Image (cartoon, rainbow, N blue to C red; front, side, top):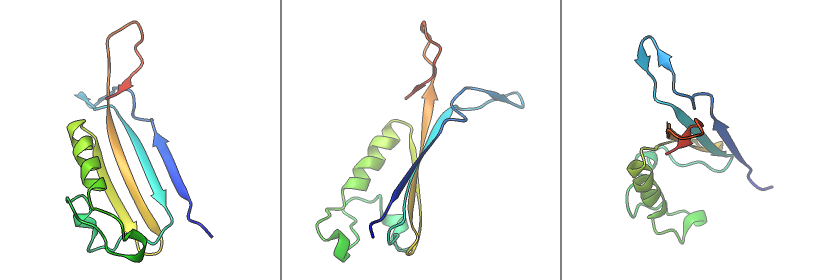
Length: 112
């Protein structure tokens, strides 16, 4: 049996709002979760490091650059990436994307 992937998009905070007189940053949250073997706890702090690669049977050909490059791109665009994982229960990556308002004919928010 294969593993499934669950993708969720939360746009409930996509509009700019005020909370207690303080302006909240509008954001969109994207989460991607699988039910795979998970990432060992000791590996989690290292997965975004350049050339870090988990040397398992499933990942023999990896170079260790993919997540590092993704993290650098995300950082440059103000996107935060977090990861959580449980052995034999899967891994979840959560991306928090800031939303920018553009003054134009349309007042629809745009993801930066």
